[in-house]
Each structure stands twice: as structure tokens, then as C-alpha cells.
Image (cartoon, rainbow, N blue to C red; front, side):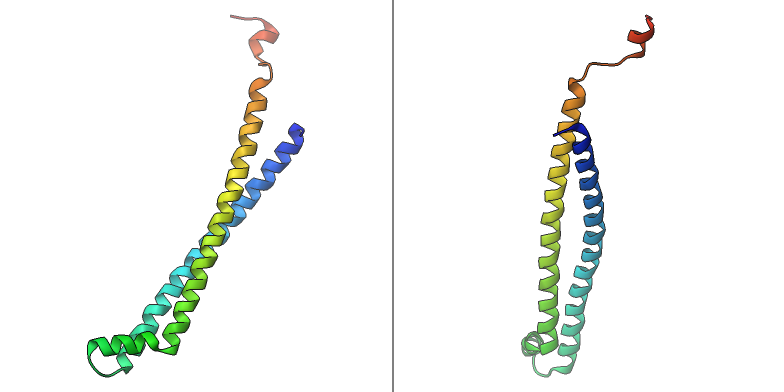
Length: 120
């Protein structure tokens, strides 16, 4: 692979890293929102239930809106894990290309000003 191809590939990886970072931040917000929705649904269900504290807890856990909120939170968590894994994969590829470019640059002869113009 040529140096110019590697630089182009590295640039693309950096763009993808930036994109996934923004999507990941958005997904973190969605996950927090989903967790908050569970607490809200549970509170509403507990407030409407009767009986002992334990009975109210079980009634709330079986409430349809609480179950839906838990499913939404589980989906948000799955999406977060998928995005995190994808971002880490892109990051590893980017680091690999960066190391290869650095290795190639390190092999090239040094082009120093003192070598061209003489000097101390």
C-alpha cells in the first residue's frame, strides 16, 4: 500500500471515529432517558397500587408501562454496547494505520536544514 493510500485511509478512520463519538454521546443520553423512564413508570405504578410495600413493588414490576420501559432501556443498552464495540474497532484500525505511517516515516532519511546548508 502506498503512503498516500494509508493517509487517505487514516483520514477516513478519523472521520468515522468522530462520527461514532457523536452518535455514542447521543446514545448515552438515550440510555439515561430510558433509565429515568423506568423510575417514573415504577413510581406511578407504585402510587396507584394498594397493599403492603412488597405487594406494591410486585404490582409495579408487573405493570405494562414498567415492562415497556424496561424493554426500552434494555434496547438502549444493547445499542450502546454495539456502538461502543464498533467505535473501539474503528479506533484500533485507526491506531494500526497511524503506527504503520509512523514506522514508514521513521525509515526515511532525515532531511535536516544543517545537512543542506552546512552548519554546526
